[in-house]
Image (cartoon, rainbow, N blue to C red; front, side, top):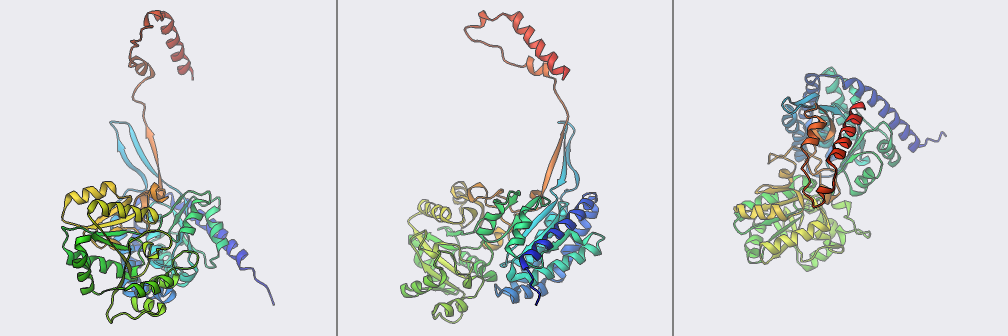
Length: 489
């Protein structure tokens, strides 16, 4: 019987994929903007055409989410992303200011390592392929093992679209034998120029620790504030629609609801009317034990599952038609699992006396987990929007919209993206919704506009009390000597 070392095979495959990607990218770097745009458009059209099939495969492979919603995400990652980037200049000279003597030239980073998660596997692959190629790069996918089949099929769709548009299909490849060693090899390889990391905190940390430049994201744990001027019915609808979309697998989805204390009764009544089930203390204890693992992390068995499935596994009985489970909480931190990110239709519910205390509490939630990610507010007050925008530690604040879809740019005019930067406060290299702009370097040419004699002449004259002690002839001699030396160089 022949023994096969899977780890070694996966490393060898990874090295070969990087080599072919590098060769393809070096040729791709000479393509015109029109040629690049033609290929990106072909990928977008293929993504839309195969959206339903790939969405169904993603659901079958992972058991996460809702097939119809995964179809929507595939269309978003294909069509909406393309529409947002199609007119961007990303090849060659992208701007010029003759008055200032400045030109900006886009330079591809080269080969990108694209880490693909199991929560949004097919949509993330489509999105990353589009933005990577738009910026003139090649990309090698490292797929989550649980979603290997659907990610490989998505890669096949993308490669065929590239070929049909006259491009080299090796611009997009995928590791077919995913192992930790293969991913480590991909991230640390000398010919990989950038890591685009979407996944769990451990994987993102590994990307930043690899020695290769990386763009990663932190966990989402966004609170949703229903402020007293809000239309409560609309606010609740948006929150529940958002948190149940694909069973909560989008990291920008709401993780808790908070309102002023005197609004508690009205908000809870509306939430219950729209399908929320508030757990009693006994139910809360049961669910708490189920969703939290011994090491303090979230139980993966709840990820992307519907309410009934989670309730059955936790030994709970919920009313028929329940869309979401809600748990009263008054604390934040380790040992309080409902204060953490829950990629499932589960919400924590908080109250505070007024908007200032709400803001302070939301800051506490986000600094525990979710710093730099997303916060949502439902209000008719511009003053409230301004107050929270200045004080809340996030990179995106959505207003009067479902946070999951608003954060990724589906219901807002943010850059359509499935990689949401969390800025320095969240440990990310960027606070942007990541697009092609973050995947290229800018080379500037700058023409001289002033001579060194002019700079020296513009220096302010000394007014110190010791000015009379300085020999002006000596100063002039020294200045001339410096100028002559600089000219000779």
